[in-house]
Length: 103
Length: 94
Image (cartoon, rainbow over all chains, first blue to last red; front, side, top):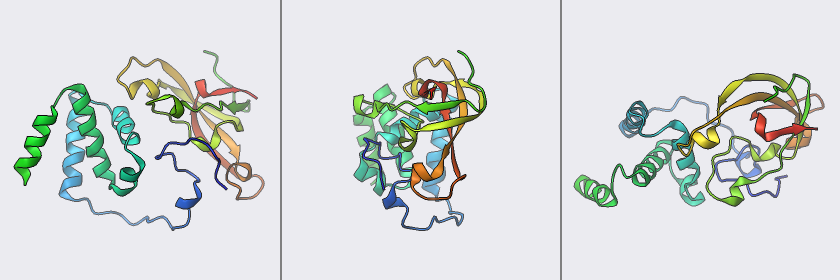
């Protein structure tokens, strides 16, 4: 029985629809993407550009449909990009150009 | 700020900052408004609700608080507890 409260998407402890499946406790293999995102976050922390708390706030602000679809490190990179745009560290034009260059 | 003693009965504030705009809250939805017992003071830490917005963050006491599990999650037996880390500013005497 779930409480009828305005909980945030990430606040899913005890929510019945997430209690139907057994928890996967096998170790997960990290991809190169995962390692790269982790490294970027570490550098941004060391350089005092962005804290883990800001990373978490950014993850928690991802709209529910995206939040549930994205992988763990995809959520991280989404939050990192949102934070860097808001802080003016990168611009939308720079982000778009960098993404185009990857195609 | 007075440190709450182990064994003190407390109630978690029934507050929903989520409804008031962007926020970062470490208090799970399922314990808000619920009564529990302070197990121990874990130390004082900068308030993550401010750190999350890169604002100056005052030190706030953090506690382990135990709640009777059956009334929280409607499962488990009498005596089972859910133990949650909760900052002092979310707690009031019960």
